[in-house]
Amino acid sequence: SQQGEEDPQALSIQEGENATMNCSYKTSINNLQWYRQNSGRGLVHLILIRSNEREKHSGRLRVTLDTSKKSSSLLITASRAADTASYFCATDYGNNRLAFGKGNQVVVIP
Amino acid sequence: DVKVTQSSRYLVKRTGEKVFLECVQDMDHENMFWYRQDPGLGLRLIYFSYDVKMKEKGDIPEGYSVSREKKERFSLILESASTNQTSMYLCASSSIAGPNTGELFFGEGSRLTVL
Image (cartoon, rainbow over all chains, first blue to last red):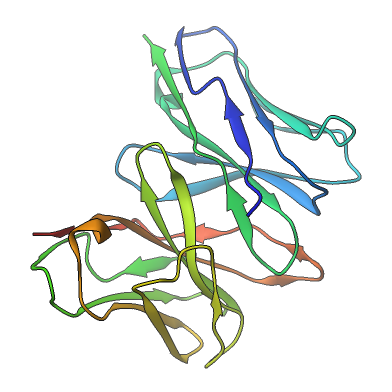
């Protein structure tokens, strides 16, 4: 099955810095989504970018999509301690289901 | 507030026991999913359902079955639990959005330990 693959796998930054994560995938997609998971909890949807979009913003989040390189990036600006979580990209390859990557753990140090 | 509720946050079962994991959503969503999450492996799709009494195998259906008798309820069944089914189980739902898969709404997860 297709899966997004996040890079880097783990990231540790100081509060106020920006955090960037990348996701690559293998074949064409309908859309790509990013989710966040706090430790031991369910996932929460952050943002969805369609295959015909290149960039999308939501608050302090910025997502880009490069379909020619089959990759996406998630930027969190001015990070806060509360942003400490795991972040997952998920690709929609049709059939009403998503394939998730392994996740990227972000630690924001106060 | 929209909600996906999983019946148990933590369960401990013995090898060979039958296990039921229940999931209920209050959003009138057509699609419902069961994933399992393991360290280093991310989320893997076990089964999903796009309508009442309909089910589709995901990537790792072996050892599992599902039931969807009502639109709001999707149950995951382990007929004979084994230690390699110790995991976090996540239920999710979504509405149909044309050819695209829309946003998934997740429950809080059920952490199952099989001894």
